[in-house]
Image 1: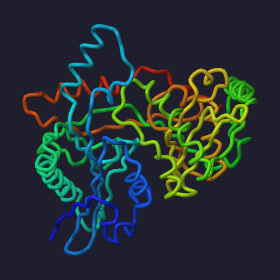
Image 2: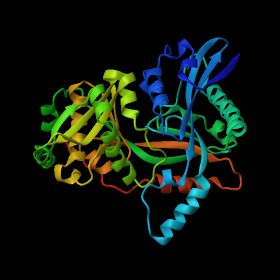
Image 3: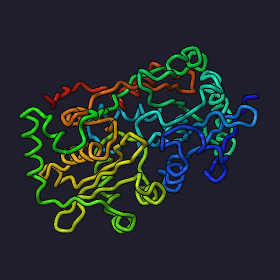
Image 4: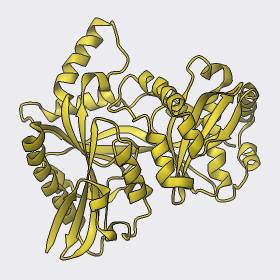
Length: 385
């Protein structure tokens, strides 16, 4: 008999959760515990366990996201038409959303199941039953309706796309979103020198210029104590970048980086840029098996251009991945052109979503998603010989 259980906290999870043969750190309890202790104030996670008789055969993360206008639109605009557009969009998307996956990180980090034990369609039906149950619970307990349901971030090669019948049945629409920028590291590269040598002259010169501009900065890894010491500065620098994005659906908690370091230990890295002993920028990395995941970063907006901090961060992330024998570096979305200039390549991604109000056409919702997460025209760079 196939059945599911929903859990509200990590402590409630069965011991077999971590025993499942998934290598995805974002589905393991250390990361989930860190997130539980430092989640954005508008995100609540639920943990779904799917059983075949008494055997755990699948897991999923469901997130309830409370969307408010101030969270979605960070930068204010005085343009009359933009203000009107934002107000119209806010009326449709404002409220509660249920996401299958982790809204805070690019990629399919929402579920895993044993393909030898349960069909994907059966597993998705269990997720659907859990969503239906959660909608009732949230309505009863919090007096809130779920307005949007989304399954997030699937590559074109993901087998989930084979379940067209399921998505049609539950009226979830497939929408293309910004690509995920991936850097697949050639097997023969093991050093920074091999990476730099592979650049064409134009991009090797660019690397040298960027390094020269950052000569005045000191780069150092922050341990748990240092992360605690600089917690407010890290948050402020992150906020500078996050707020500048214009559109966002959450804001990290002040203790997020400290919590991740506490639970992930050496699998979570924080590197800080110092100028005259003052922290003016940072970036973070997560070791996810043989994949290096770039995570949140921040920098002083008035010093970023002068010291080419963002470009140097990207170089450092690439070099860290190469020197530590990772196979792939996930650079996520945004800033595709500059990421392609250091070696990353775009990989198309899709989400599935719907609005629960039948009077709002899902074609309208698709347009809104594209407005909030536009597939921009950009020129891919080719830095290698």
